[in-house]
Length: 272
Image: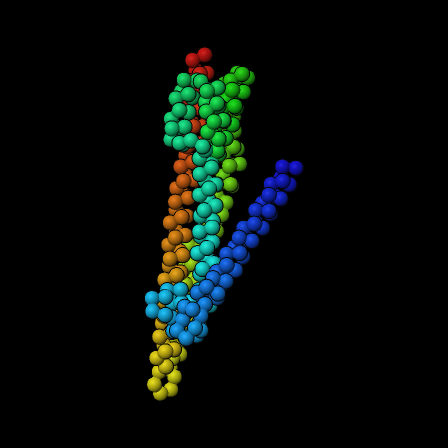
C-alpha cells in the first residue's frame, strides 16, 4: 500500500512538474508575441519596423523565434528556484538550525533524550524529523538492553531510513535546474547560429549586401547569446545554492546521528 501511494505521489508530482514547464513556455510565447512584439515598441507602430530608441523589449523581440523558448527557460529557473527555496527553508525547521543543532548536541551529550525530542517537535522540518526518529529508536534499544554495537547499528539504520524518506523531497526539481543550466546555453547557441545564418545569407546576396538583413541577423545572434547566458548563469547560481543548503541539512542529520550512537555506546560502556 505504501509503495502504491508513493508511486501515485510520484506520478502526480511529475504531472505537476510537466504542467509548470509547459506553462512557462506558453507564458514565454505570450510575452514575446504580445508584450515584446507590441506595435507601440517599434517605429511605424508595427513589429516589422525598427525598435524605438532605448526600447529593450523590442530589441529582445528581434532575437527571433528562439527568444520565447529562452524566456520559458528563464521563467522555469525562477519558478523552480522559488519552489525549492520554500521547501528547503521549511525542511530546515521553524527556528535557527545552528542553534537547534547546538541545543541538540548538548541534550544528547547529557543523555537528556526527552528534552531533545521536545526540541525536535518544536523545530519541525526534515532535519528534526530524522533526528527524532533516531532518538525514539535510541529509547527503544535502551529499554531492550541491546549491546552497544547492535544498538548502534539499529540507530544508524533508523536514521538512514528517516533520511532516505526526507531526501526525495529536498532533491525534487534539482534535476530540472541542472538541466536548465545546459539547456539555456544550448538554446542561446541555437539562436546565435540561426542569426548568423541570416547574417551570412545577407552577405551572400548578389551585388550590394542587404545591410538591414545583415544587421538583423547579427542582432538576433547577440540577443540570443545574451539571453541564453543569463538564463544559464541564474540556473547555475540557484542550483549551487540549493545543493549547498541540502548538503548542510544532510550533514546536520549525520552529525546528530553520530552523536546519538556515541552517547549510547558510552551509556552501555558505563553499565558494564
